[in-house]
Image (tube, rainbow, N blue to C red):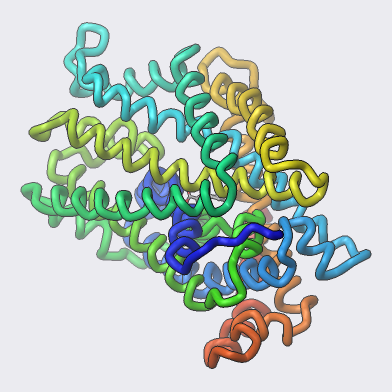
Length: 450
Ligand code: PFF
């Protein structure tokens, strides 16, 4: 019998678990900082509501109707037609993301352990720890063995959870970890807001300068929204195939998107006031190093340095793990459904090769590595191709399928649980799926690449 999530809470916890991840805690603040602060935030919020929720509902509806993995769903809904390739694109994109995401997940774990042992805050190369965090990050990330070991630990944890299956693995761990994650984030918000001069950071994050909205800012916001909501790569099709028939899709999509946005906002509220309060804006706000360099500098200036730091990187590790299991589950479900593999075999077939590919991604980051493609490290190449190209293309195809190919009655039936719910938003959602999302994704693509 097809595995299902067993409760409403489990559905939301698992799906929020997938959505809330390094995308929110690591990528989002960096994107805000690189794309003009609050102006980016506004565009991001618009993308979540106008494009993210409709695409999420498309995936939910197709997944629950098909009741199979991403490829199998399209095969079932459109037999004999090439739409299954959309599912395959999702499987491939998610696997590419898995390989580099696992490496970053390893860093978060490494930072947690190094905070507990106090090593992160010990002097570096004769220097005081303060100011040495860039060096430290380079040591941790470009090191030969340590980053690999932590990445392997993350892969092993994923394996352990995924072997437990849908209910006893994914659902159970999400039910436990997600409340902890929210609680820790609330504590961090309070700590950050109580720092002297916190309001400067809030102003940066919340008062937009509209002149900063450019096409690049818009495409980045769209890419970030889709990445953060786990869209366009079959994760939500796969998870929705585990939704029972009583699950309310519209409500779930709305709840998940709002909670995901809330976490992104909380991260902004945590990071920017802290950075401003300690005078680390400007040079120290360096994109993706924000979390691994700037925040340790912040913790270093606070009381109870190691405790806050360990708790923070624990939070990040939790966020990472509930996302990696969802990314890996796309391929696990694909192997199970397509090749009729047992769960154990499918999990091993997905995660064992990840050991090799993640190792290559990690090694590509060291300065003398030859693992580059077109001048980019393998790590950056996978991120760029999967996140900026495959993910929007996958989302576009899913929207076109849900809006123009699948019968409207199928979609409405899914939104309203066979007519038992009122579904007064159905018309508006279908309008967004058909007429708003596809042109918006195409327009943004064209502006960026032409
Ligand atoms: N949504 C996750 C995050 O924000 O970190 C990342 C992610 C999960 C991306 C699943 C894509 C995906 F299919």
